[in-house]
Image (cartoon, rainbow, N blue to C red; front, side, top):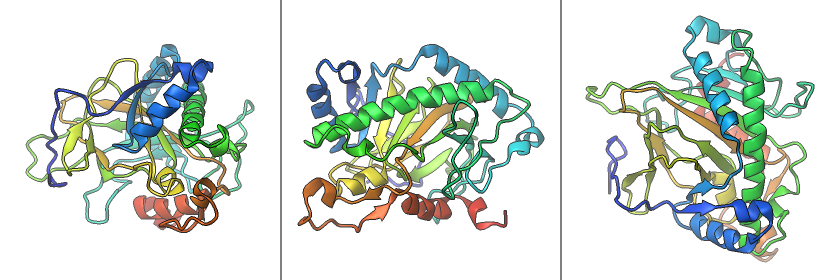
Length: 326
């Protein structure tokens, strides 16, 4: 088994992460075939390359350009939108640590959530509140929201597919999504010092907290996924695809049938790396209960919990700012 402290990964000749075209699901042409493929992939590594996703290339390009302009600015400028108590704004390097005994992550992030056409956001949960948009990059708001809304539609389609793959009504996972607590984030990874004796990660080994992660990689690479043998394998960027992965809450909802797999990022390319991320989660009061899938007589490994309560617990462990005086 590979050691988590090493940043080395295996580059396999044949990509172990399946590539699934979801356009037949999106168009309603052959949803069952796509659902079957999604279901099978979620029981394996829990990572999937998705093509035919429908996000406009111009939206991706605009989001990348605005995000780079923000991250390349001086820290004093970015600090004008320091992360809020509701997890909105700039999370500086060192603000996250995915394991108790790990070094802090090298990444920095800009985080936002849903808002309506008038810029209004819900404030009904500790992880939801007003977005913070930097005056210095006026185009960031429109670029971020456009990407967020399109990526959210991809998440909805995937959740439909997962439901059909589990022989559930297609809206099963979307029944309480009027006020989703999903988060968007631009995640910036600086080039790492490859001469450093102790390995450090852009983001250390972890599983994702929520239901589903939708990730748009660039062409730099660096995402690594741990397989069932404990080896780290490269999730090599594939042009025109997203990469999505099952989160802890979806694994819990399916009582472990769908796998939430450890992954990490190490950026030894010598270049900047930028990811566009949507962390999809339903309304905070959504009950995550495997008995809704398998029947009242089923005895799940973990008790039911609301989406909002679970996320609060995980965020408190991972983000140091949440334990400091606001």
